Image 1 (spheres, rainbow, N blue to C red):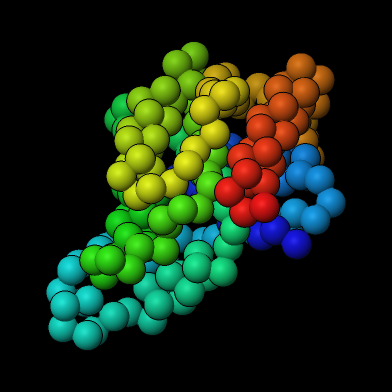
Image 2 (spheres, protein in one colour):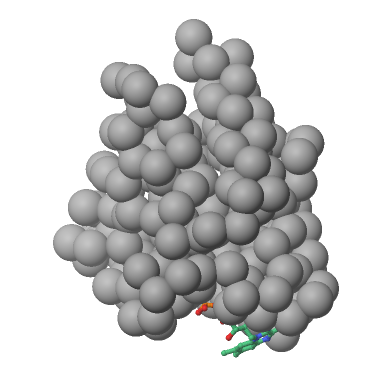
Length: 184
Ligand code: FNR
């Protein structure tokens, strides 16, 4: 059983990122288990916590949780043309103490979404930049930029548009191929 952790770049109750993630989670084949890893409780990263052995319990729980995952799916909006701070903070927390990053080598995939037309391209690529440094192999193709996201869901939060579902399935298939390549 491969465990996929899903990290969201939004804390909002009615988040489109969360709704999209819940739809994408249903597209994984048997043998793949998904779980949204909540990141809203992580204190802002402060290196003193690690340097002075005052590590918040939330950091330890988060780092241990990510260590136990086989791969990470990021689903994120764009804030001011970049990665929302809450998601960047989670990346930073998991990357330290120096030399003990929980991210290294874990296959990853990025879906960016926006109610607008530009589909959070800026967030998608700023996130990619961090994942290069964190040594995470990332799905290259297809790239997932989901625009006009507010129009996609029915009243139960389900994506009904057949071509979008097909696209998301092809994206998940590419992610599964990447995971198999790295995790066997
Ligand atoms: C936004 N939004 C936004 N959208 C976008 O396409 N490009 C951007 O740069 C920004 N910047 C931005 C900054 C801040 C602080 C907020 C709160 C919002 C709009 C954003 O895409 C929209 O609120 C999404 O619905 C957020 O995703 P969730 O919360 O629905 O997952």
